[in-house]
Image 1 (cartoon, rainbow, N blue to C red):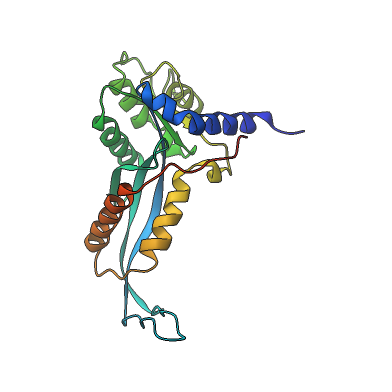
Image 2: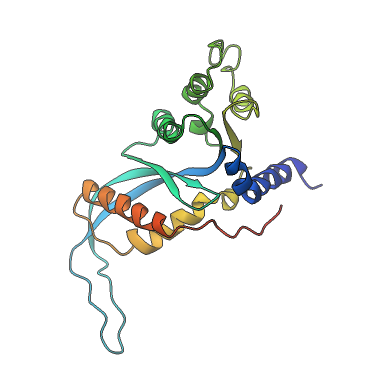
Length: 229
């Protein structure tokens, strides 16, 4: 028998994509987010061979590793613009909370619907406490693993999805990363920037990513989402 619950989640997300423009006009921002992990700062050992008649550009395959970082980005689904990019060498609960706080601080008077996958860092104790703070909710959250809202992953998820909150989350079903629009953008930055460039340090790569985002946002457009669920 077909599992209706995942299908219902996908339909909800698709509806949010289609209604994002109208929601934005009413002060409700819809964002798609995830972490792009293990982004490697690779320095190619030898220069690329440029394009010549009858021969395409050739990239050197040997490289030197200079470490990795994680990129958390928020795609505003109404217009395709990337907001509040957050980069760090780690990818943990605290990192995601800092990224969400940075996003919401851009427009503290608006409401936010944030689409993401069901990773444990997206349903963490820290995120529940952050949402309670941002939504000015009473600090009666219980104790993680024992009681109240913080008791379990399920209870935390229910709290974070509450439609009455100014900041709420909508989660994709398992094995459904394709429905999360930020994954499309991660493919774009990987193809157009990261695979082509050579970096001598993490800092150089981070600066390159921020410049790419700034340039991308100038001509960004909402993805033409046709799937309805």
